[in-house]
Length: 601
Image 1 (cartoon, one colour):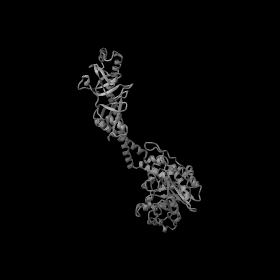
Image 2 (tube, rainbow, N blue to C red; image 1 turned 135 degrees about the vertical axis):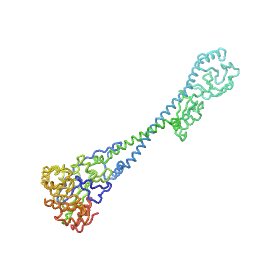
Image 3 (tube, rainbow, N blue to C red; image 1 turned 120 degrees about the horizontal axis):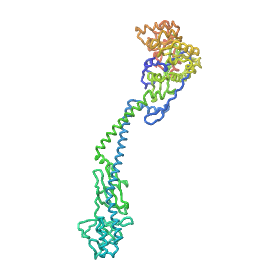
Image 4 (tube, rainbow, N blue to C red; image 1 turned 60 degrees about the vertical axis):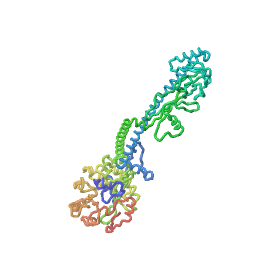
């Protein structure tokens, strides 16, 4: 086999100067008179690309070209590295985001628990106030401000609720109190800060208690009905931290609030933020919790950055864990991308008739200069729309037992091209390289049926590349059956691999193609001297001779002078491999006079 001889970059659509196109399955020679059977289509499996499962189908359409450009990102090693880095960054950002969400949940939990802790004393005082008023309304029934009346109030003050100062103040005017007794002149308490409702008593906050003999003290006066009581100024039990601020406010029916404890301004910022105002450039979290009657609220505000500073050890550990996980998963993701988009995986998923491309290299009769044949050279179009040369994919064809299936696809493509492009009246002999394992006359006759149906235009030749040892008896029987069907057989690469004089003598082949090393060897080399002996031996067995690797006019002139004469030659001096339209033009324009030959660009 000569699969390694052709190693052009896969991004170049035409082969470089050289004759490295020969390989079983992908190379075929077209000669005077023969036929190409049809290739069977191999169904391309569905593609399961990186991370989500979508199907890729490349066509010649603009959409197909766009998809090819997209796919190329996953094929290039450099792009795979970039994708891996991007994936790592996205994963890191995702993990950090998840950690941030967890931190926010923790902050909200802390805010709720601390707000409840700050609000609970207010709720407890409210319960005591309700109980005191209920006791007053139930137990104080004597004539207002009489001694029995005061005695009854004193019994209520004795209850263990911490409230010990009561007043009789109908309509906000104090007529008597527990500490001062009856007053001859009623004292007006002034308008309340929050009016009495069915759900809550009236409140007068931060009033001077000197009128009760409590000089220098300030308290709140709470009234319900004709009774009022004195409550010391609320002290917020939780004043917050460097990242959490707390404020207690009293709220009137109109929505006006009054600061009652904690850090002043927290509630106002919360209200502004709720109304669309800005509470600062740094991210902050705030919420408010109120008593059942809505009279008192505790508003908390947390700084996310402040929380991170306070929890810097945990934050650093979270970042390190996120980085380690991101690196590990990105590396695993890259391995999956490399595996999924490896050449082998791509080839197996996308090998099909639509991805097989054929090029045609003219072959000339040395005596007349007439182009009576062409060698069909298979290429494969990768999913990124690049052209791949056979030295990369033929080993996969062999490894996975696709030799005959691939041969059928090449024949299908070649027949479609040649039947449409070869000029009328120009008969070609068409050669396909096959492995000895595929030398099955029944299968090959089916494969080459399209060419066999046009014997006036094509003659089929199968070339045996001796990559394996040949079982002579079996091979001879199949060669005879092929000959009866109109298919000729050549030995390819004679002088290399497993080729032997024994096979030349034992097998009734129709011709021999000499390995290119003979034609490309320096004139005074051992290989050049052996060329004449090889030709004499082949002529003695009455076989046609083909010499490939003709790269210069000097070599062509040397081969023309060889005796016995050589039948056919091919090489870059005659022509490079051509596309179907270019091959047709070459057939129409090429002169029959070998002296007028020039290198075809």
